Length: 346
Length: 169
Image (cartoon, rainbow over all chains, first blue to last red; front, top):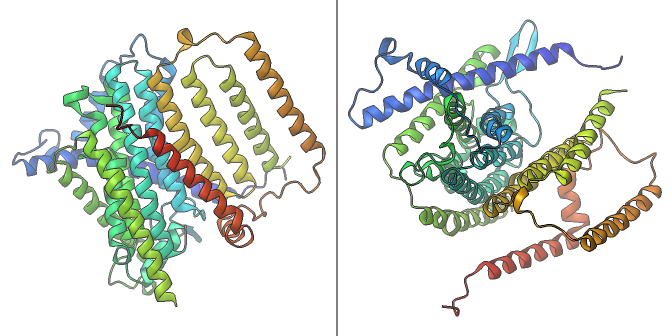
């Protein structure tokens, strides 16, 4: 046979990819709605409540509005790169979901299906790689706009993401030393049998959380789009759905980083105090997905809570925090973890 | 032709094509972006050799960090086709000679290679993280540590150069 491909496996994975991507888009859509509602609650307002019951159709209305807006491409911009920017931002935001275990196995039509698109043995490094590529969307878009404000926003984003990637990577190394595996699936299985990783790595988790805020460009690290000094930051020149892509990719990033944090430090699809092995497989998978999504909702709420509570950093404070506080702390955490492993394994 | 061969040809075309584009494009920003595509194609080759760790590290280090810094510098300098300095012919000649010599070395190295046992696709495990770690920390521990000291000295050098000279003001 010319191309020996397992057709059933191909279809299975394709369905899984479509479901995961659309689910993350849908969740990100309603995260925009939740963000406005949370902001409203924190500021003692009502929030969007006109479109549909309780304002539930608001994200659809927002999307429609963005689609129908006039699309403006600046005359002196590099047109191909101008379009490539938001496309890349969206692509890298969606790509991370490939290695995340969404649940255990389900049995459908006599097949056992893993609820993970790819269980590669470098899972966590893949996540890290895609995160490090995320900055290209912003940088390309900001340069192609041919606007000084945009460029400054893009440069801020690049230096911020590179700086915080270091601390994030080092805190991840400490986690890897504890788990001894790079596969996200194995990490979750370990956490089902032992305590959650956050018990072993509290400092590591704190560093990871702060870096996740910075990587997602969320307040207090949203300097790339600081509107009072940079107009709109890297997306100043963007309009219509291209602007929508940039804004939307931020919400997808937020969702995905919540999933990654839940998986790495909070047991992933492990429901606490429930023995999944005793349940029927499909039931266990359902319980797992619900547990994971519940943890994710908590994280997303935390992201929003911080955004509407804490003001933005000044740029030098941001760099100071990244290089002088987080990196030494992460190094300290790595060394203590190594020492503890050596001491207890003796 | 099996699927590995097809993928190999596709990735090779992608790598060489974008390398040529990188050299020939006028704008430095475009050159940097084409170079990123080259790194992706090379990572694809690593995956074909079942060296997943190398593939992803190549992307994290080169595409994710070094090229971002390159792009950063190029964007700040605002280089474009109009401000590109005109290179003089003597420099171009030197470049051709140097490149030609490198090509000669590579060709002679390829001529001596044992083509039959060149690559292990799919089941080769040389690039997996466990094998790689065992090799680096057992068989090649001394060169590995020495190169890490070299990196450390380079880092310190960069910090010293980057530090503001307090005696100037």
